Image 1 (tube, rainbow, N blue to C red):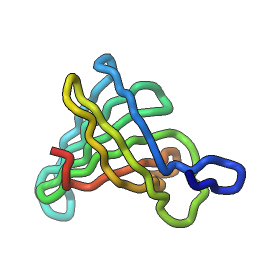
Image 2 (image 1 turned 135 degrees about the vertical axis):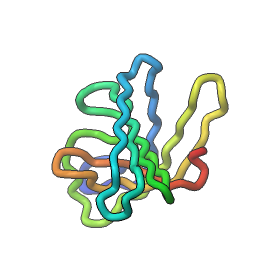
Image 3 (image 1 turned 135 degrees about the horizontal axis):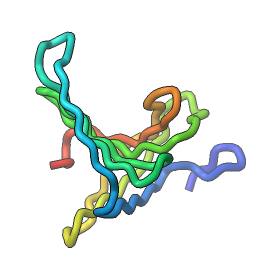
Length: 113
């Protein structure tokens, strides 16, 4: 596993989101295209969650966590997701800054559905 300074990297990530997570959905008009865009967010705590972002042409999934990301470049990550009794699905993604408060490990469309 790679290390950044004295901290472990985010090269491997295993998420366990329970059915009791609080899920919210938001659908709105995209001001640039006039099409709809949607976000489905599952919150396990104020610090951790998973977000699906969808537009007319794209779908992405992201693990989000509250905190800073000090790396200048995206940090590679392996995301393993398991729903119900299905087999785990492994995605290659990257940690990036989502906004001023959250970082995200994300994966674009291929393999999500």
